[in-house]
Picture 1: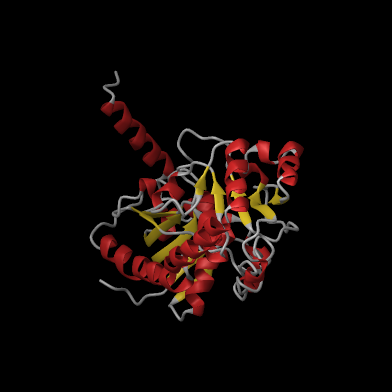
Picture 2: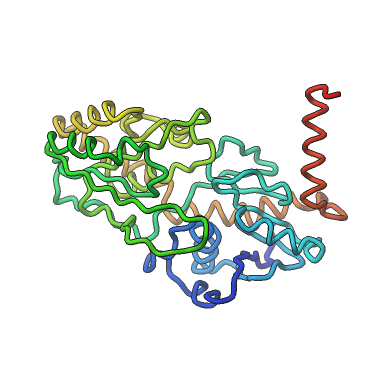
Length: 333
């Protein structure tokens, strides 16, 4: 079943609401540094520019498909009584499950079941500028682009930079602090890979292999024509089909060895760049737009038919029900 009804994207706040709805992600990439804007706002803008029936709202509608970021779940919950006819779709991102949502969209497919939870690749970095091909196959500059908390501290210290200097490689750390208190601009240039030869992005170790994180840094590297040296991440491993996709490392020693190999073997550098170009095809805007169209206008409306509860339970009720199920499964007394 396909719906022609408008899909609403909920973004709270009044001060900048009109201005945000007129943004172009590729012209104003600094506006999309936070997850709420990178997911909710950007998805709305991309679909709107593609001519899809979507609208941006700062009030949760009473009916129709309503998309919101998990970080706004408590605000959405306040509208619970007035939104009984709505199908709530949470963009979970790097958050815990949203129990009050009817469906969730994940940026990592580890927990996607195709019935209530769906995995959709993250949008590419807005305004991405690829590596300048005139740089040839020499490895002269390695970089990190992202939040400082998402990089293993060993790569933020002076010894790492000194080790690369001995290899004849400049280290550029384009990092920003993470701030949950509100949106701020940070003087980072996550869009341009023009003068970058290799991306190094090794997260702090995690026993779940960062099960909630997307493969954004890998996909951006493919799109930019830049080899990637990454840590152990479930999302990246799920995309891996060939050793040329990226180097997986766990320590600065292993990362240094990967960079040394690229420096000393230009053929490997060329093969990884070409392989990345092929892999990037499935993550460009057109296929991603098709994925969002199908999910929001066909799959979710079809699944929602006949499944809507007569009364949406509160967050407290859902939490208690979840706790009771776990207790029963473990034979609690």
